[in-house]
Length: 481
Image (tube, rainbow, N blue to C red):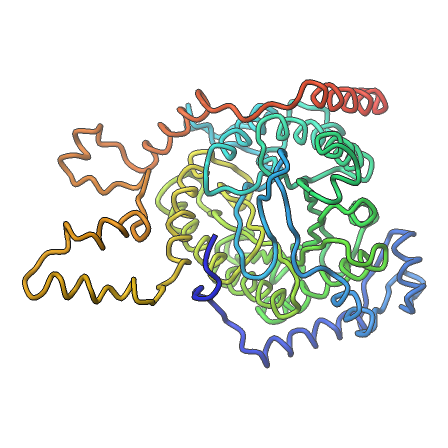
């Protein structure tokens, strides 16, 4: 995606402050402890020498944490449904995708907010499949027209039928996640092939402050067993379930994610894991949890820096807004977050297209963000400096008062150097008016309609589709639905 040799970077934490935050997180783990509700996880921690009290609060020594960090992989290759390389998670490489489980959709046709249905999952997957700057897919919607116990699995099935891009899953528990893994293995040709060329990842999270429920850990441990890459990302809310100061917020979130890493690596040393934190900030004036407060950006990018400090792949955010509509605020906040995630080097950036504090999704914002991410990726290529780019021969040929318009240097480099927008307007007023005078949202709506009308992802092989349908029906029958 970019030349790492001249990649611009963003940082808020000098090395000594990263060490102080890590030390604080280790104090939280060793002296305050984490409450763990999974029997298997408790057994693993006890066997590793982590003492516990009667409430199952485990204190995890720094040596155990450092051992887990050392065992975890530094990069995670991820493939698409067709088996082609898609992402290399690690370093400061930035990838982008949708988020999951939204309650509401901003309907592109009517402009009204409504409850999400399973068709929203399929449409979001198909739209993301068509957009070149989106690298992976999450459900985007939590369907209200599906029995609650089946909603996650039905969403997974809808995604894999509507995109070839890698999928990041959410699940109700170990049982439906196991079925998703079975389906993914059927696509790939078996469990071993899925382990070798993973195309699904899973997202799980603890409950802040400092609690790790059994369903979250059960999913974490299943991923460890089956070699499926897993994100274990707390969502501590500054001022509510975490300290209001950025450094304290960051130290607690880091400790919570590291607890997941320890349990995960004790179960399966070397299994793929992504560190992360959803650094929510409670606005004390409104009671809302902001995705786009400056303090959110600081804590979030601080967590990315801590992941790099530890050498671990990381979970990220992009393309979100606290606005209730796909409007100017939404475009502004999305662009800022895309820029921060790219230049901080967050690896797996989800939630593109989120509005309204993560409650509402907009497919028009998905289209707009595809353009904004492309623009940001052009910036991330930086300024290469070599003989060809310094262009002394071209300057010499033009001389004083000359033109570069017809020079071979210009013709040879124009497509390499200049990023061309597909959605943002550079037409000039008269040309813009002649083309219909649509604003950014109007142009995004037109492009979205064309994608949903015309785009069809590569289909599943008939025998694979049959196997997936059979496994889904088995789960439905077992649930009694």
